[in-house]
Image (cartoon, rainbow, N blue to C red; front, side):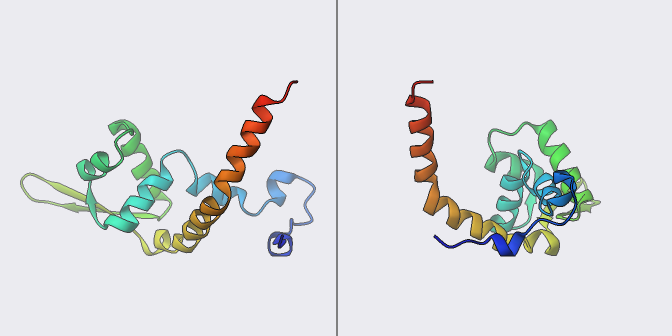
Length: 130
């Protein structure tokens, strides 16, 4: 098994929350609905709100609105308002958001390689007498 430990060594800080350089990224990118929204915008292109809602069926309109606003604030999504009748708003992934594609690809590769291992570990844990 290859170790990637050298590529993400912790800083010298004694506080684990401050020492872990990926914690802010995890907070930004991996909150509950961020990943499906970014994934959809990356692969489907520019979308209107209702199109996103149709594609991500289990998200409520309120939560979708909140997540899109946060993603726009973080610079990962671009919101374009078209002042026409009726008004039209479209969302698309930004260049900054698109720069996450290699990370998502690596995670998808990890999932393909290891989710069966995780399921086996969970099953072993759940069936062990405690």
